Image (cartoon, rainbow, N blue to C red; front, side):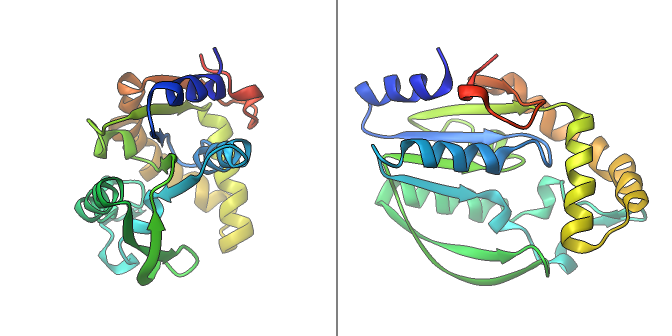
Length: 207
């Protein structure tokens, strides 16, 4: 059974489903969330919530001499994220922040988000943070490390004009150690593991 069939089957017996997507940086979390929304939006209401909107401002993100620990769970307002998700699912509406990645700054907290039939929550640590969430399908994107690095190099250069050598050094010193210690272990907690080496979710096939 592929992922979209599994979601359809789940909704036969449940009024809503909360799809929690985790994986290391550039593993395809946002892409999968958007593809699921595009596929299901003609049948169900769909809401996407991103953990990235709960980043701390740059000055408040922990760092070591190699750089900012942006992939660390301590780089996020974790309790606020968890609380807002719980309020959304319990009350049907929540006020959530808007974060500007380009400036590493929260620009507001006035975004009205409404609960849908399908609620997709994606981010680096979402399976860990939202462990025990009701009506939940957890997905871990098991994307090849080399693929993630190539995407990160491209993203850093295109959006921030960061040279390739700097991204590789930052990856080696900061991103990879944090990912191995804190993000990859979520694979063992996931209901579904998806291999995403090629960057395309072939009919949302699970492994």
